[in-house]
Length: 213
Length: 213
DNA sequence: GTCTATAGGTCGATAGAC
DNA sequence: GTCTATCGACCTATAGAC
Image 1 (tube, chains in turn yellow, brown, red, orange):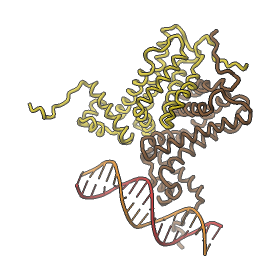
Image 2 (cartoon, chains in turn red, purple, blue, orange):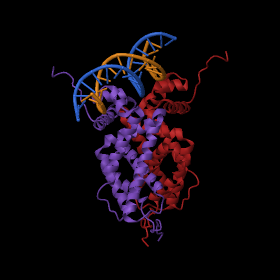
Image 3 (spheres, rainbow over the protein chains, first blue to last red):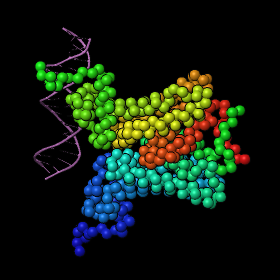
Image 4 (cartoon, chains in turn yellow, green, purple, cyan):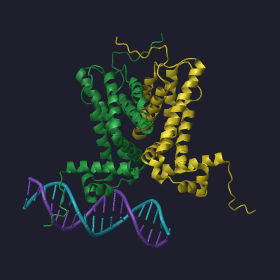
């Protein structure tokens, strides 16, 4: 065989999906959410556009996958590892600081997700993608909390789904604010304030008191 | 003269600006941020496209004005009026609940702002618009806090700009989360959690303690 | 590559408010 | 009369279709 001949690049489906998601991310980063099309993604990844349809089935599914992977990656980078199991508030606090670090490192990815989410909401065909991604992310956070609860035998004095939704909102707000302001000096302080919302929520702590003395 | 002849519709500049902003909002709501152009706005408002440049000077200024007016309107609707002057945390709490109400009422406007902001961040020419709007909004919140401080003689134990930024982030996160989830049942509970971040921040309260008893 | 559509922005002139 | 908001034509750059 001629080594110059363009040999087909066979990849397992999962691997192919990953590369296509990389390409989709790059397309949106370069040309905006409105430029995201199956053809552009295929072109960027160097495959026939038919491959994208094969791998994802529809644009909605592609968008969903982009958002889902980014969200999952962020969650893994943030919630994993050496969090103090004995203190929920502290774990949340450290997680939010971890998010701030991740945000600075992968700014472009967060920007893409933000734009893609907002744009998807406006497009009837894609609305479901944004919706189901947020729902999945909140469920994933709730599952993390449940795991913590199971491991420690402790519970929260606020319903887990509510805490999870508020955590997701805090993360989103932090990201949106920082993407626009780029205020690095204030970032950690803002994290501290937001993290306070989750202090004193372990059952038996009787809620948060602020002494008036 | 023919009564059918298109008589020019002279408006004071301010009034014309308002109508053009209405048109811009409608364009984005109908066709997405990528469809926002001076010509589309002009067409929607029934004027020559030259008028838009005349009224705003540039597209960047137009986008800035759209974002600024929406943000100002929300701030006025939320922070004004019968807030308890004697309790900062409670004022914030009620404001966030007010925001939730405003969000439900003007959902479309919030959606437009969200999409426009995200899209502006991706476009080099418009990045400044998103940036300066967020900065202005944080400054406006800080100014509200300063007014409260001046009126009551009380201060916060956290720097005002940090609290203002965190408040903006909370608002943004709440909006983004709700726009995607539309979870009306949880909305007020999530507000409660987020509002907790601002409890116990008056100087002399010694910060927030959570009893471990 | 060419061709077209559309974008943002500018110019000189004019209609109407004052 | 002056001043301001308006208009249609125009320029240039760019993105996409072919």
